Length: 363
Image (tube, rainbow, N blue to C red):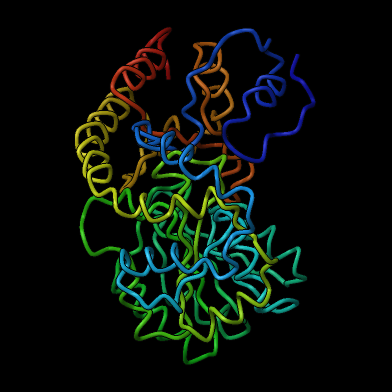
């Protein structure tokens, strides 16, 4: 008999999902529900944290000068265009705070924290759904929603679809939004997983003063417990965002890691090498089992058991019983649980996933 437990709001919440299905929490699970890099954290991280411990007896630099300069060098912007944040979640809430009690358009399905931040700041929210299975954005559908909006939130690459809106689409969107006085907040938390160079929207900051970019160091470096992210925008916008940020929002240990993380190009190279090998291999394996797979540009896949199938829950249960934790999609508007999100992991774990899907005639 199914438990009446609520659906967990994020990945990595094994106990809540097991309870939802009435399954005992007695076996270890391989976690395919969180989109973290299996190569991380970097090997040097422990020593870096130990070396930074002495700074815990002092308040952090309130302006975070050194980490902001490291980010600026890495991303090719001025330090005054950088705001360090306590993870991507704080960045989202700060961006929403600029237009509190206004009108927001949210491109969906996407990360639930955009709607949560907008609700916390008193927004009227208009969803703009992307149609499955391509999840493309038709700009002509934006004309009416933008006319009434103060801010537009979208995720690029998108979570949970793994799709990437083309650069030329973003240029046209930003131009249209600027003409109507709309701020465009683009969450690029997964942009480092895109193997092709030049896909980050950072150069567009010089052309569009209505653009705010959100970045996270959580996913690439597997540091969800440290809470480390940042915003990029025009200097004037950064000053407005900073005015709404609590003092010393980012702790000393997190701030001290920014410069060495930004300098570790070898880790990024190894990540892309892993992606080039494992992403097409896992996608091919999933397709061979009859699953519908949204082509992904990043480190996770959105899948379902055939077009229009409502059997996402059955797939979740089957994987749980095989010792695999996947991400449900009941809190992604428009997906309504019919899809399942699967992170990309190392070869052995990916093979275990394929074996579990193959067993007993799955899917």
